[in-house]
Image (cartoon, rainbow, N blue to C red; front, side, top):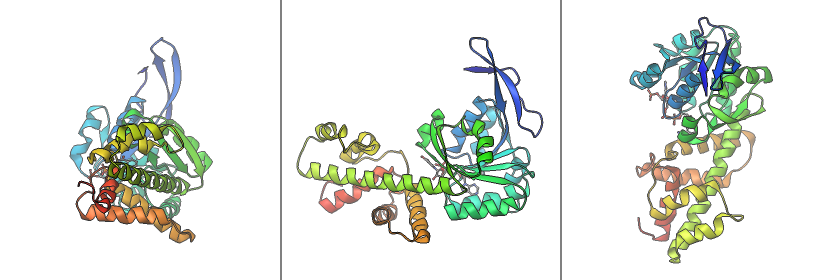
Length: 323
Ligand code: NAP
């Protein structure tokens, strides 16, 4: 735990401040001026963690009411992404999809028209690697650097500051971002050049699709066989079949109840990014395509806001299990 001796950052510069630990020792920590755009399920708690770490944060959210908790915790609200970006050396976006990042970056009141030359954009949304590269090129023309830093770990990880952050970009920009990223995540991996973070996130979502779908098939077989499914999960969970999905989401599938978690809508969006990337690179992703189609069906039936373990609904229906 730290208490700030000099928590305020008065200029548009990243400064070094001293913090006092509980045992009274002073420690040097870099405190930065950060703009944060997109205070949704993920962004709102990420902002609170930035503030707790002593960064000065200017926020923008399209729905203004969602900035209230951040402002109460010490953030400053801005009226547009451009105004927020102008107040900071580091600008973070965490919005829904590729068109949304394009909107907050490229529109008339977007980041590109407010950020100062030499500033750095960290996009923490999950979007297309191709769109990421194109945005980075357009920003570079105005001397604004960009890295892509999508996350995994869910809303729980965002609240606890334990997100896994996968990064694409130039080494110097990643190093500049680290003090800020460290306030939000505990596993921070620089994977490669711009776009590599988004490609890594697509890989993450392909693996999630496969493990969840396999768990759903396994649960359906056990239920049809009339087995005690708690015992089944216990029996197979610590062997080669063990996975996060089996441990944490098989009970949803057994009970046929799917509280959040991670929404089907968002995972379907991420699989669509994986499939688009695969088309560009020239390779098939048959399992990802299959699960994406299953999720399309669930969304059509009104289950898009359920947790992705709801893919079990589909195999239950095919198996004649209770709906
Ligand atoms: P969310 O709760 O739906 O919030 C989306 C945020 O984006 C809101 O602040 C929304 O503003 C803003 N937004 C969307 N479109 C916009 C636009 N065109 N212009 C301006 N603002 C816009 O989503 P989330 O769960 O925080 O997810 C954010 C990103 O993190 C997504 O890319 C998602 O895939 C990724 N992610 C989510 C999770 C998770 O567990 N939820 C985990 C890992 C990664 P309004 O408030 O005005 O709607």
